[in-house]
Every structure is written in structure tokens, then in C-alpha cells.
Length: 339
Image 1: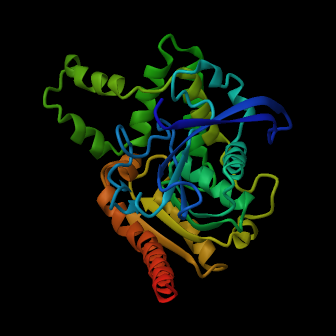
Image 2 (image 1 turned 135 degrees about the horizontal axis):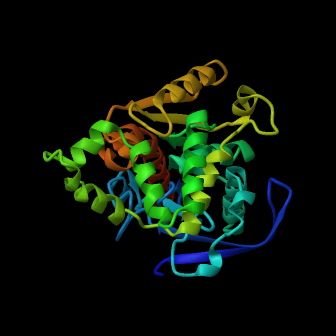
Image 3 (image 1 turned 30 degrees about the vertical axis):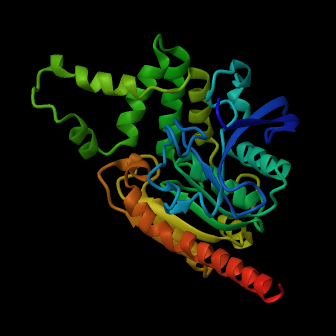
């Protein structure tokens, strides 16, 4: 697969005390070569992958040449969550998915960055599951991230998410058509009712007319069952405080600027939880900011509302570009003065 590389990790110690003999961590890079520009790490969510921009890029509205996250100015690194089923190598799948936690994935991503000789990053950003991994990366290495940007996510799971995960896990392990039926449930859980009705615009109220809805759910099914089991399970393990002190103590160690972006209709991670987190953080940190997007797209808003997200992110990434440009001009000025 074009532009995809793999880092092999061996004898990796998992949080639950087990050891994974081999983990294939695949990744892609976009923009400037590693070591020549500030690094941005972007995480995919449950049904995503490392192709964040370019052909089939799931965030083309934000990432690319002269876009908000400008590949002319930054090095963008995107890891695949190991076992997510991206690509054609079935050996990379993880059947023992219940052994893994979000903290393990965050640790694996740090191992990947250290392997690439990257010690600090300008930003870690992700939506949904990817944002929860971003939180864990910041907690594991609180001095290595300049900007933490979790979108449509939270640092903890909720009873509602636990119920959703357990129902989907039952479907995935007992259904005759597991992914299709699990995605039926997930699409209704993640999406705002107004968005669902807006998609189909069904006028015929007869039950026999639901085929467009079925077709939409089926054509959006892009993940293998093994990968989807793991992605779903990881949501169950989202708890920044597990075997640690309270949230405020953890957050107080994180040096990054924290930009929380909530979605008012988020079915998976409601904006109310983000606002509560913001209020807690404001008591202990001056460099925390809350942004909210009002949208009918529900959990999909971070993928659909790219213009609104760009409006929020532009000041963060533009300021760094100005610093880089001024530094370059200063260096060139010194060069011409000394020649």
C-alpha cells in the first residue's frame, strides 16, 4: 500500500499484565520529511485509518497543501491502531482484543514516535476514540506535547457508552451477520435523529420502503470484524484515572495547551461532559480552551463540519507557521549578511 510503513514491536507489556509477542504498528507520513518541521500526530477513530489526506483521505477538508493543517509547513504522522484491519495483511489482526486498553494504544504510539526519533510534537489531535487516545498520550508523556486537541471525545467512558459497547460486543460475537447488525445499532447510537432523517428524507411510511436505509448502512461498512471488535472494545477501557490519582492531579501535570472541541449533538461523547471537563481544568490550568460546534451531524460532525473546525484550529496552526517563517527569514538574512 502506497506510503504505508510498519514498525515491529516485540514483547510489549500490556497494561493488564500480559505480554504481546509481536505488534505491527503501521503508519503514514504526509507533508515535510521527519526532522525538518514541527510534527502533528492525528489519530483516526473507530472506522477510520491512517489515510488522513490525499486520495481517500478522511480529513481532506482540513489537512493538505495550504489548508488549516498545512503539509507545506508540518510533518503529519498518522498511526493505525494495531489490529484495525487496514490493509490486506491478516497477520496484523489481533484476536485477543480484550487484552488491550486505550492506554496500551497510547503507549504503542509513543513507542512508534520514539522509534522515529521524535521526542516532542507540536500537536496531538483526534476525534472520538482517537481523541481518547490523545488524552492518554498526554497523561503518559505530559511534557512532550505542545497542543492537545481532543474532538468529540472525553477522557472517560460513561454508563451509556458501556451499554453501547457491551451490546455491540454481543452482536459481534453471536450474530450471523455481525458487522452489519452492529453497524445498524452504532449508526443510530452515534448519529443525531435529525441527521438520520435528513440523510434519507423518506416520504413513504410503509416498512417496505426502508431499503435506502439498509443500503446506506451496508455501503458504509468498511471494517473487518476482528478490527471492529477491537475498536469497539477500546471504548470500554477509556479511563484516564485508572490506577492513577484524581483527574485534576493528572491534568495538572500536562503542560500542553488543551483545546477541547465539543459537539452539541454528539451521541457518543456529549458536549455536556466536555463542558464539565473544561470547568475542572480552568481551576488548575490557564492554558485550556473550550470550543463547541452546533451541528445536526452528531458524532460525524468532526468529519463533516470541516469549515467550522478549521475556524477553531486556524489560530493554533497559523501562529506556529508564522514563527517558522520568521525563523527562516532570520536565518536567510544572516546568511546574506555573512556572504
